[in-house]
Length: 501
Image (tube, rainbow, N blue to C red; front, side):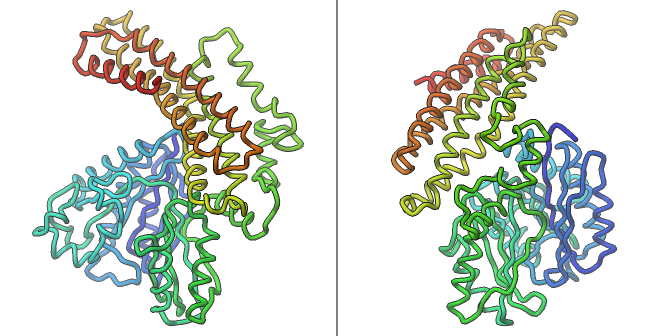
């Protein structure tokens, strides 16, 4: 498998003609890209394709899929329940492993530029890649659908695309490309044909009209039943089970009830674990209680047989031995990242064990926000453990290359900038962990105060160690080679000083 994994979930405006969908999927078969799922919905007249692959390969797969959709789908003849503005309607990139949300923003911009260049389909950027705050929400961009955009794109400056001229493709419309966190497409069917009821429930549930944060919703008539169609944009902070419960309560106001629900595309295992914990009310639930999780952890060496608290040293021993080995990597930078990841883990654990408990219900939103942020930071710090060692190897290669062909230090400086970015990110994350952990003290179980104190101490150690790595690499950079490098050195020293204070 590739070192970097990006998910791409393009939505195409075709859900009835299997041959066309097959052709689009076939066009996206690029080496290094894997098809995880495909969903077709005749009522919505829409298909959702889930791909995962290396960042380079998945960009090309997405571009080819947009091109094939433009060949096969004519929006002037298209009808369906789901709003649409393009043959390839929306193309989001989601970070999975070895990449950040910022990396996916860069992917989205590259893909957007290529779509216009190759197919003359105008492109709008949304979510994290949005060029303006009002374009973060897909609904704002897609308002009026294909016909409305076609009528206004040339005359209304607010509808000018981010890539391309202000004109829609005659039959393929326009495409929205972006970067976002994992989204769950979740629909609830009601025991009524009255679509107005579904629309009223969707209005009550979605955030834009006063409902739950990170929920988007609309009402449709699908398969002869009223459907509340939703996108959950952050399941960590607004879990799927709470969404279902609110839909059920709102439905009861109109004398109806849910009869079933569906997932369109894929759903993270953690989301279902959260739902299981909620509905079953299992005490002290932990994902390691799930047989398959335990089996996977034990077989991969991440957990000793007997559970998460049995033989913990077996999981960390290889890394400790690598640190002790007479080799340059892993070193202090990787150890700092590991310390920061452990700090985030401890704070996450304390917040998770208080969230949902009766004594802390008033702090539910704050705890959920902390849990979601700490989960993200923890994953990025885990990635930094290897990234720091790899950046050192890149610097060593640059020094060797400089000895063979003197470039005046340009190559070494470039490598050092990469080696600085990793520990600087570790330091920034560690500083944030300290603040979050400190904010958790008054809103979590006081019996777990020692865990927060340990987490803060680990985060402080990670901050100190990471900044020392930043300093030593900055000192190794040559000044006077380029104004850009000199500016980078000054700006980074200022950032490090701020973090120290």
